Amino acid sequence: MPKINGNEIRPGNVLEHDGGLWAAVKVNHVKPGKGGAFAQVELKNLRDGRKLNERFRSEDKVEQVRLEQKDQQFLYESDGKLVFMDSETFEQTELDADLLGDRRPFLQDGMTATIEYYGEEALSVSIPQKVTCTVNETEPVVKGQTAANSYKPAILDNGVRIMIPPFVGEGEKIIVNTELFEYSERA
Image (cartoon, rainbow, N blue to C red; front, side, top):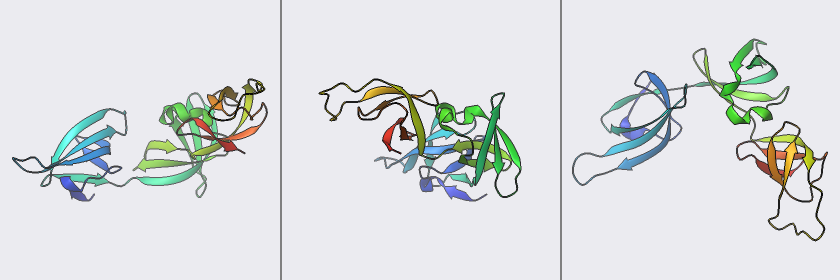
């Protein structure tokens, strides 16, 4: 694994530090009046989600880790495990549903997700940023209500509650942003 200097750490880098795998979330380079410059780095543990603030001087060496990304197709869920299939080797992989967190309801049958691996261990699952869903329940349109900045609550076919514009009705397909949990556009 390549070693990098402490001042070369950038947000998004994955580092091996204190026996764990950490992703650099924020990096702030500090040059105090007295003493040497350092990088104040906010790290997030990729295995358990813990956060850590650490200082790295420019002469400190840190191991940078390269994660392998594979696109895999979601097949089904059973007993809290998500089953994915590699589209090249047709090998099936079982992962904990917790890896997706609150974005889990947006995972649909046959959807292609990107899974990051460190060796054989799956660390994260990312789904497409925009997903098509159907509006199951919403309030009827109130006459005279303008479209400017007025939204109404809706429940989607996957059980997620979001706010939608008043012109969207029940049974319509919409595109939802899975990172922000908000309405994007009509499908």
